[in-house]
Image (cartoon, rainbow, N blue to C red; front, side):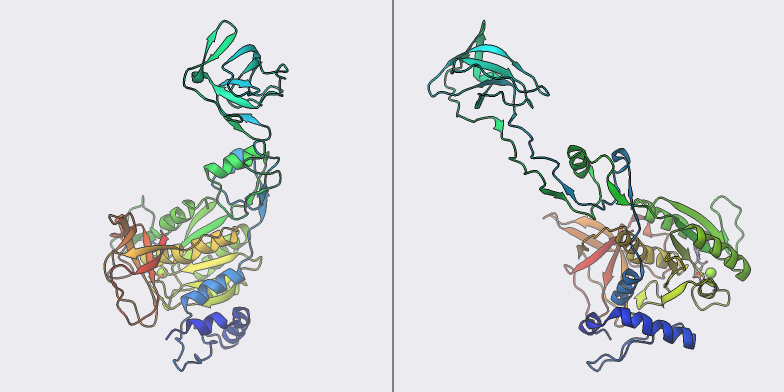
Length: 441
Ligand code: AMP
Ligand code: MG
């Protein structure tokens, strides 16, 4: 069913236009704009996962950039290139405590004439070879000196310093020359990486006190369903406790997407319209769960359309998560409407929502691959997501232990899992050892 090379060659932007006019005119919920595969195999009715990913990325605009105090930048996505403020080290730097001398072969004694501390302007060594200055780690090399002798290599008798037996210093030793690490202006950090401890040090060391980072989007996480009850409320036998919003909120928060509003709405057209309108007005992104399937009370696509959210697609060839709906609101906000089944919702969140939001923050994470620890069978016409627990083999390679679910609502046993692997559509059973793309929850 899949023709990746054909899909890759398509101009997806044209397809969006085509798809939208088709679906708006005909009011059809399914993806039908794709032509037949040129290799003779008919295309699936559903949008292939790779195309869904591409359409999301094309439709979303990057989140804006903001300057933040360096103290608040940890964990954020850097959105500027960083170059060396000056040559590093910026001066000939003494790398250990000792004495600085003008080296002469065979010399074994010096007279101490002063001390060069770190952070102080350079002293000048007396001319000739007799004088030595005490130097401290990190201090500038005194003018006229060319060699540093460590404390343990000489002994002190009054003001005289005598080389220990068996020690043979080399001219230029224990000095980290100016510019040895990098020249002024050298490229140090690229835009699009997460600021972790080393990058924080690079920013600080190069005088960037207000780095430019991606703004954290404000996200409305909305559950829909008349049956939903809060975790702390009494629950009738015909009701269920809402869990999707907590899982989705956690999945977003662990990626630094912490500006969230949680909301639960009933399957009521008027209330959904009012509240979704408000949510769209006040948030940079909306993540819904529930109400996107074929049920009589699945109002979400209808309400979103009425509120001017442009549907990019509805339904993707993936299991779990087929009813996934995606659109763009009037001010460009992405709207992800996920199916309500808890495994489907979380799978769609990890596989689509999180990567899309991170991409819009300017972050480009390479796909992570893991090795299957046990065989798995793909689905011929759809991408299959399988929850996995990660472990390691005796060579330290990451293994994925499948924890297949019986139904897409079977989430209570996901507790020990780390994320999901993606099985492309296919007819051939995947043996243990197969490499697959992994997405953490
Ligand atoms: P829906 O997509 O609205 O048809 O919901 C599919 C299934 O997911 C139903 O069994 C719902 O009760 C369940 N469900 C929907 N929303 C949630 C939620 N927030 N937490 C847990 N289960 C949910
Ligand atoms: Mg529902």
